Length: 193
Ligand code: F6R
Ligand code: ZN
Image (cartoon, rainbow, N blue to C red; front, side, top):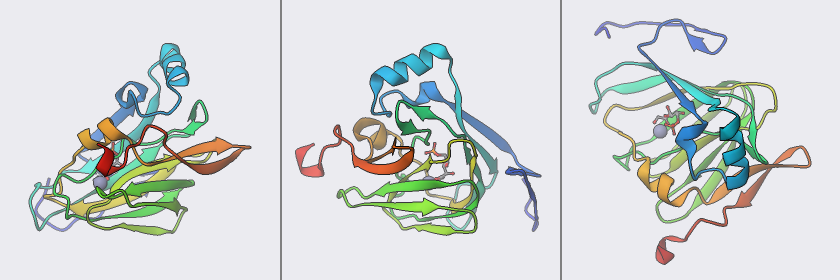
């Protein structure tokens, strides 16, 4: 890490400079894919790589901006596209910006109150995720990586537990070869929890 202005390039989705390379495989997604049988069968075949994150290290304090590249690989578990775990920011009142560099996908989002939104990600499009909105990237391409640049406040932190417990309200499944947004049958409204 350096406290001096810097630039970096992005070559085939990979930053020319980074500090952390995080990989997430099928096994970290237990309980998240709707079709449990398909998930178990896929895992029996091998713990496949679903997504990767390249981070540039910055102090995790207000005033800093954490940034990097997220790459979700193409694939399906049953009819459900490969996706990230998804999270709320631990500091709920913190936003995030995503800039799509390559591929095609969707960002599935929701608030603690149960409002939801799904926005398409396409190269050249910018997505603003406001404070309070949990977010999950879904790769809806059958053969291309979904590559996004992200930036968010240094003190945001991550709450993965809430989504691990309740899932997202909306699922993105492939139906007739195309992505469709469907209700998650396991999701419970806040009042029912
Ligand atoms: C950071 C952020 C992204 C994600 C990345 C992987 O706040 O939203 O950098 O961390 O897309 O997804 P998760 O963190 O949900 O595994
Ligand atoms: Zn985030």
